[in-house]
Amino acid sequence: MAEDFKIKIEFEEGGATPVLHISGEITSEADDEIMSSYSSIPDNKKSRVILNFSDTSYINSAGIATLISLITKASENSGKIEFAGLNAHFRKVMDIVGLTDFVIIHDNLKQALK
Image (cartoon, rainbow, N blue to C red; front, side, top):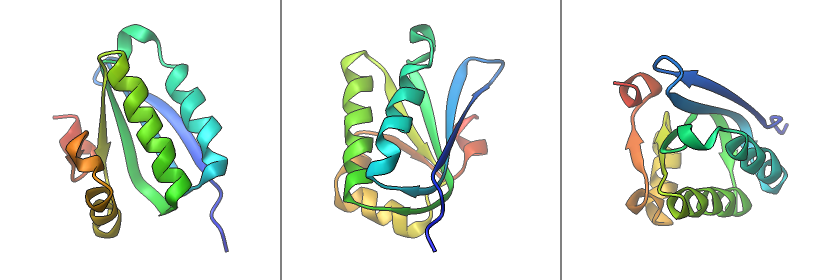
């Protein structure tokens, strides 16, 4: 049974660091929500955005393409995307497709916010 995709934005560290909490499955259906969530973050807070994957159950090639688009959009605006909470399988997938060359990966959200 497919887990519904959900995304929630929270501002950590006294409102300075936006965190996109992603849960469920990241497929083509998540593209619009991920991109619009990122776009809704005020420009002055986009220098560092953390994606928290601790509740993500699945990602396919369309989901990877969405993440690549997001990383590209952020870097075009001098921003950084960071990943937190990837399980071992997702970390390996991100490494295989080369995303680990473009993002900082943290074991968990707490570590990312240190």
